[in-house]
Length: 330
Length: 144
Image (cartoon, rainbow over all chains, first blue to last red; front, side):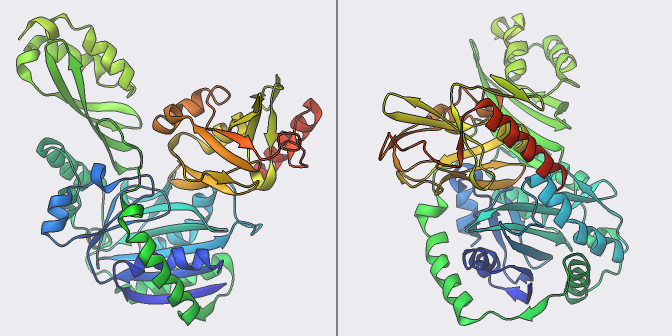
């Protein structure tokens, strides 16, 4: 297998590289980072639904929509990336995503341990240190290969991450708080953290221990040409704004197991917005907008009946529709 | 209907198996509807995204993608033909495929040749074939 130690790359090339290798059917590990700041969406997402495009435009923030899964991520120079490209017919590649991530995130866990960070795998594809997310990952089939792409946070720009997403100011505030509570960085965990080069070196060693010896490789013309060809495709509006899932309301992952939901329900007397935080699919916190529609007593009853319950939108609608005050308090 | 390892497989349809695919096929007049079987929906977990990107399809071609567990997988066509309808309900709400895999068809394909469409070593239909295939699939996953 080949290893591409590519260091700082342009924003788009840092993503195009693993697409290009997969389309060329080249198995390899890429260790890299970016010198730019940009936002990267999973394939299922549409920037128009997901992002505050005005904010992105005004601040010169580029957008990349990758061909693999996972959510929207803020990427900049304070992160190190690893991308693993393996052929689908490789007998060592698990078929199921949960097995795939668990297996190939093991070297990253080992690298974290070597750095003095006690990392644990949190299904499906997060790594946590002291219960907080330090690494996010996504995967997918590209060409005849399976790809896992992820990164480790050296430092994280929480504000920029919150600002690029399309959401209400209330949700943005909650999201920012939730991120700070549920995410961590190498800098936060270790006062004197190693350089990117040292981290790449450890990642390289751990992946080699796991996958066997790798041959140092550089980007030849074949791969550079493929990057150029793919750049046209992935930067086109036709790809970027291709229809994705349009979720009613907003669902934002803070880390595996922790989500924020913002949803509007129509009632006879007007819309009610709810904002809730779920832990392991159960409602942890919930707030309702439009106070004039709900008396304080009914609000308290509603919150008591929903906190701790499993997050199920249909159940929330059912509970709300059965609050008499909701239709008469206006 | 048969049940293997707790998963149900109706015998009123056939199953496409090439390269780990788990696609059911149901013939209605000269149209073949396809969907994901119970093994696929059970093993991959909750579907969060489904899309179809092709119109003219060949057997074994990727016709679209689905996401589950942060992984975007390809969806393969079991036959040659033309996609004449897409189940938009399933595209908008992929969870219904998890909940009712056999009621949630994904696309309807008009085969190039209806007589030969289902004649393939990768398309199974008998109770014995399906039972043996799913048992092998379970064993394969246990070894991962």
